[in-house]
Every structure is written in C-alpha cells, then in structure tokens.
Length: 141
Image (cartoon, rainbow, N blue to C red; front, side, top):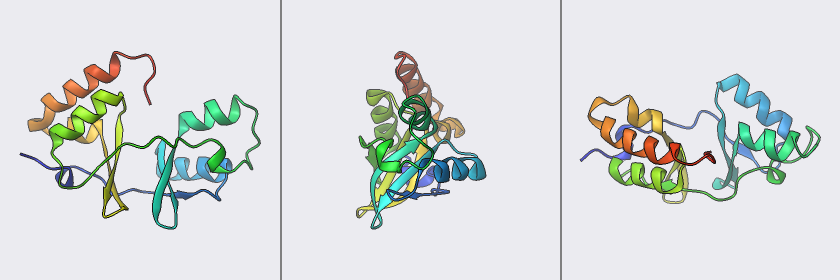
C-alpha cells in the first residue's frame, strides 16, 4: 500500500494571517500555484485559493490590502504522511476537493493533490475515483 509520503509535495509557499490579498496574489504568481496554506505560529489555520481571492475578495469589493483572514478558507482537510493513498482519495472524493494538507505532529509538511495521485500510474484508479466524485458537484475547490 502506498502512502502519502511517497506522493506529496513540499509546500512551495505559505502565508500568515497578517499577510494581505495583494501579497498572496504575488506569491501565487511567483510560484505558479492557486493554493497556499495560511499559518499562525507554525500551525495551519486556513488556506487561500485563487478562488477565495476572486469570490471573497474581488467580488465583495475588498481592497487588495485586506488581510488574508478576511477571505481565507477555514474548513481544512488533512492527512498524515503515513496515511494511505486510498484514504486520501476517499477524503478528496467525500469532500469534493482536489488538494489536501499533509500534517505531521501539528505541523505542515506537505500538500497532496489529485494531480499527485494521477501522475503515478499504479494510483490511477484512486485518482479516477476521486475525480469522478469531485466532478459530480458544481461546487469544487
């Protein structure tokens, strides 16, 4: 059985709740990502997606100087590095999400995405299952 540790990626960037929307957008552009974990004293307290910026920031006419905490997603889904790929795929499908935080001993150690599952040929079944479940809802993250 494959574990999350084998497929996860190290987070390329993180934000703090003191950062603002503009700083987040610059980081997303710099690292070519649309998902950044938000930390407070080395603990994950939220995450910010490019969709959060658009829906809760721009669409609500918030200024670029607005704090991340005003637009971030606080509902978090995470796995540990030792959990199975099957468990991650099931969690993604159940909650219709494409990325999971990887937390070990309360600290962020990685991110696992549907793409991480899909690029591994032996894991194609898990990725396909998760994608089919995620794609059924018009409200995906």
